[in-house]
Amino acid sequence: MHEEGLLDLPQPRRKRPDLRVRSSARSDPRAPLHKPAGALRPLSVHRVRNKSQSRLYNEYIQRYHYLGYKPLPGAQLRYIISWAEEPLALLSFGASAWMCAPRDGYIGWTHEQRRRNLHLVLNNARFLILPWVQSRNLASMILAVMARVLPEHWQEVYGYRPLLLETFVEIARFKGTCYKAANWLYLGQTKGRGKLGPAAKQSVPIKDLWVYPLDRRFRETLTR
Image (cartoon, rainbow, N blue to C red; front, side, top):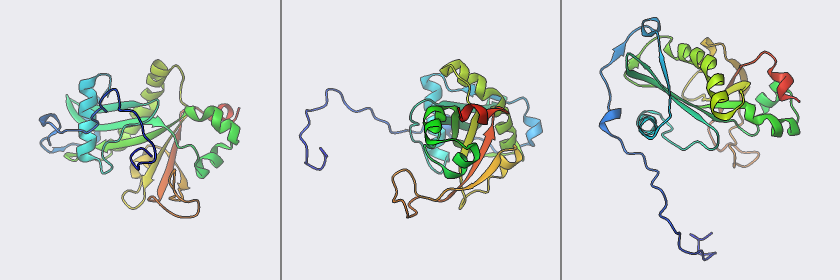
């Protein structure tokens, strides 16, 4: 409203932080890597912990992910996956969608139960295999590793264990093959309305919804 001239606000006390991601040689393309997934064991899972790792993660996502870099709101964990000190892939997990009919029906929770327990569902917001890495089954292998280590990391950082993972796969671009191979469950499609779109009109791309339970009794807890 200030920018539209409807309100007069005092001058900011501090300059706004510059959130632009600038590329450096650290994220330049590497030599092509052609290896089967089995030849890339053991994978190294690096949780982003400091500013240097954060800048590198952001650079990779900005340069090579089709959605680019956007700050994640709220609780989150970001990862750089490597082999023999060579970065292979990047992932992030954070807050899940507030409402999603296929997921909410799958869980069977009420509005109040969702409000109370939504933090126990994490969204795989980004998953990028770097473009010069060509490795059959690597993506599903990484997802399997993350399903094992993520709950412990989340418990360590935030003090509780997530119970369910979700992700949204843009159907015009991807088929979700790696999620299926990693035993994620397909629940259906979104309506393409987005968070702020009109209720009866598609405003964003339609996506497939996949979920992965992290605990056999996830429903019992999520519907309390």
